[in-house]
Image (cartoon, rainbow, N blue to C red; front, side, top):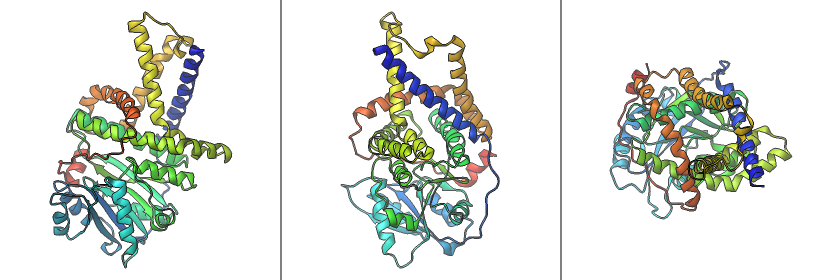
Length: 412
């Protein structure tokens, strides 16, 4: 019976892995039939900030020079429980500093919910709301691209999240590789297949009427995934705009990265518990591949956990118990199948870097450490499973002051 359960789990994981690999192949090409519209939509640009005095000034300069009519967008920085000079820097750049103090309800989800309520009370109402983090830099055409998608009928849009400091350390390089892979072979592939895309926490755009209609309501540790699930459950499918690029600062050290990823995984468990079965049931009832795909994406945290437990079991059996003492799926296939599976995983990341024309030399040198980053997700997810009821938000410090011109010059 144990062997049957073990093999069944491996078969399910294998099918999901093949599905994800097959899906990624549809990101190998990029469609060029996009419609362009004259600037029409007005935007409230929200920036979530907690003690971001070191980096927020660079973003304010960046947002002041977007290639979009100045009368069609305003910037509002949510100075959330700040104890530094974030608000003063924002005001010095002529932007709106919206100060929020609530030590009991901490985190970006609560800050956004508060800011939206303030926004709805203002005399001026906007067609859409765009959200950034304080450490970001936006491509000059970002709002133009959002305008194009809104005019084309999209109601929720995710931009292309790039990395502004991929050469700082092997950790930032690993983040960069992961994001290039996700943008090209997860997000673009879903866009090409007309599936729902998932939100990434920043570089997001929302139609105002939609926010007023369903409310924000996303206050978990992963407010982006939570709002994605709420939308897909209602038949509203977020879109992906490959050309709307923004650049995000990644943690410099493994310790900082582990804390950030632990928070993500804790939040993912919460969202998976809440939305997986309702989405799965709706996908069956409505025969909807879109909802099934998003249900699988939502439950991915459990897939990582089960993969880790199965792998650990096999290693312990081989190393300590003189195994094999139970059956594994690979025992039913020739040895070369294992090597093909490993080669496919290596290929997919290298293919993403080639397709994205990555020119950072240090990143290629850091590739040797990338497997460590990938494997580290296993123990982080395992620990997150046992601490998933911890709702305490943790702040990731941002210190890298980089201008957009620097990032673009390094990219060639």
